[in-house]
Image 1 (cartoon, rainbow, N blue to C red):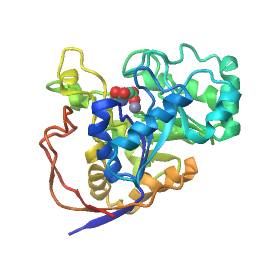
Image 2: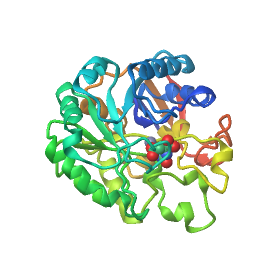
Image 3: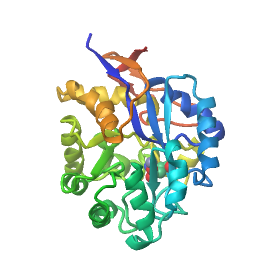
Image 4: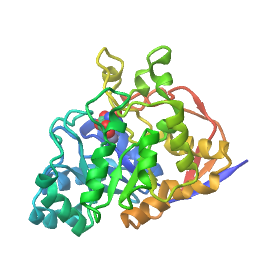
Length: 335
Ligand code: NCD
Ligand code: ZN
């Protein structure tokens, strides 16, 4: 039977939520990952030293293992250089949401006025704090990411020393942008390597596949697959696992977010194996992120085996992607 050993897998974009939901999902991520970049879009969002410390503490309590590091983020607003200096040791990145484009992003950036952002972004560059961006406009849903490319260009040109991560990219346009600027990087989810808009809304509506950014066209998915399978050095895995309770997904106002944390590594193994590229998975799920972020991850070995795994119908109140379906790979053990 085929096996794969991944060392120190990292999920560089995850939503762990808070309270009861945190208690359900944190152990699922800390079981199979060495660390994860934790998104700050709580209600209210993570914006102060106290917010970061408190949330980190609650995550640590909710996890069921010690060999996991939550890499903390702040919700972007124009922070002063002094504030960033005071918090630099406690955060890894700042996450920028344009206002209103996704779940809990209401307090995000209204307009990209470079001069008003300059102090914050220059200080981040100086201090080595990464800028993570949810790159969507509020235009037509299929065009939102492509329309955002001009903002990435403006940021990359104005702040050449700032590391900018284009989060959860879904389009050919974003893939093409990656090599145009040295300081642009990207995360890619597992679901965007698997589905297109057709899977979400082409037949019966599938709320558990509905997320922001929405899955795009086959040529977009192919472009993502190409750079992921070759483990392009500027690309990292970020699941964007975004749990919502079942009643919030199976409703007439379905919240955006796909829950993949407990199945992400199994799905990635299947995808890389199908394309005979298993040797590149380690770089995609860990090495690239460690190099880009300058992270030295907690030691962990995850052994996966080509053996059926039936995805549970529910984890607590949450329906995972592919609930009840059989995956080809499973996690054999974690050391
Ligand atoms: C995320 C969430 O639910 O917090 N939703 C999503 O569809 N991805 C927010 C985000 O990352 O856009
Ligand atoms: Zn997200």
